[in-house]
Length: 306
Image (tube, rainbow, N blue to C red; front, side, top):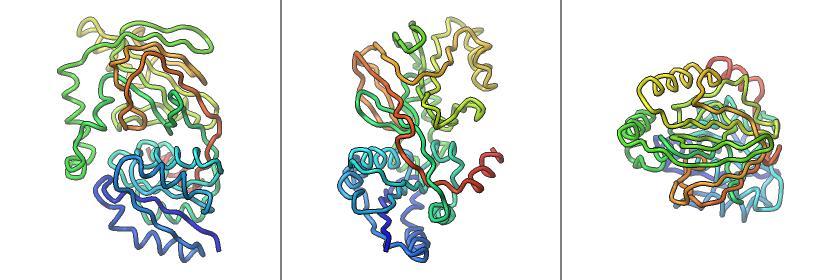
């Protein structure tokens, strides 16, 4: 009998993961899987559990938010074995799940894992630490880990908007130099993201026409510090209309590997989780490094609805 290892964060999102756990397990058991449940209690547990136990499972499933999914991917990578990974999104924003077109219905997401096929995607490395879809700095990037969990549970996505709006009152630029395969970018920036997703924090979206999660490339966005209200309005217009090339203050390009020199006091987030800054950063794309179980038909329908 094949075995599914389910790694669940019962506190993620609006606490739906724990509520539907029995239904999720029933889906897997009816499909003929021996289902093993492991619960995370603190940060890092998802990585530890996946690292230690992935070799004993045929499929590893993450139930929680993007942070839980990040930990499970890191653990599977560190385990030394390649296992298909399922994701049941039960967080607040679920950016990565949105990009993949995964169902927000937890039971349906479990059914899609059972009927799904492995889809190889890229993930990233930030000075050796794995991330699944985005490394970012500057405005709004501290929102995900600054919002208290109980506020996320109560207000959902609204909590991110309220916390992010506070950044506008205290926004400050960071000096940064980025070198990739093509050239060197440098200057004073208020926001930057290296991503493999169409959604970041539920606030900034990229067109699905420019994001290929399996092409060995990240989409990179750098937003310079506006000097006046006119420049700020130009940036907002370009970002909301996804017309990045229309604004000279925004650099938007693709890259598979880059070296960044930055203020070591500048914090980053990896998939919404805090990452301490450092002077020299190497970010690499790990091409088709993990296999995500996706129901292609259902995912395509949900992406078309967006």
